[in-house]
Image (cartoon, rainbow, N blue to C red):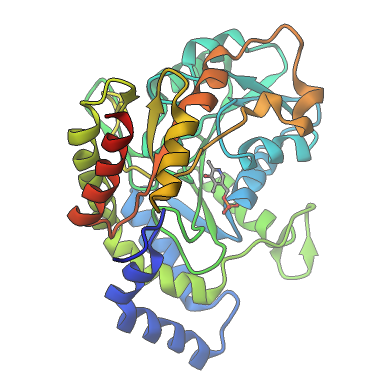
Length: 375
Ligand SMILES: *Cc1c(COP(=O)(O)O)cnc(C)c1O
């Protein structure tokens, strides 16, 4: 029997191998390894897919977040509100720029930032909110945009786990994740919903001036070659990665559907187990299951994980430690801050294998083992 994996990139590659191989060979033949035509073409195709005015490629998702905050002209001491339950990159760049991360607890059902606690965390120094669309579903953007408008704040969406997810506003309008706030940021890390074969990232905005600013910042702060108007960084998407992403982008909706279908099959079996809570999708968003994450109740998570390990079934804890308990962020946490939900979640969450190639036999093996543990 085939070894199960959290993410099966190899089988996905096999299905598109001729197109990928020829795309890579094309770049090698052109020798336009940096800033080749494929990069511009990919940016245009991605902007079109998202219905956003500008997509600007960069080196990775962490750089995208950093450049977004730089482009907004935030200054040391400015406060940026974000979630306590996310991958470290979201918060790292805030601190790296000398800004002050203000962590906020999350909603227990969706794992996304708790909008009521966002409003309570606002001070006169608050300049931006960075919601993360965690595990593949959108944070409550309508509420976040309302709070931002009321307090004159920027919104930078971290869409690294939700590229292609859709948010529905109460007036019925639908927008893709990453195109609602001031700037959206994503990652093309190989295991993301749209992954390249190395590092990659992008920023999105509908604001022409911000787009120009982002382009300049990712290119050493220049608009005219060797004229440096501001301090920038070197962050670009390799042409080879852009060529690969151009092959994969037309498959993104089908990939996301495959993940959702697998999630529904998991749900059918696992929702019957009383010690397990299957993922909840909020009414205002689609869920594209970057991760399929269970909550395992009654302190049984670690034992379940151990049992699955012994059965050759991989599972992962995203994330084991809330950010406010990370040593690196000690200086930013006030003693009286409470994070009851993220602390509880870190003890309950368990993510099962989730990718575009999961078949019924694999899902049955995985759900069968989970059922066996609880029986
Ligand atoms: C992956 C990820 C990032 C960082 O992307 P990289 O391309 O690895 O730098 C940022 N935020 C979240 C939520 C992520 O999952």
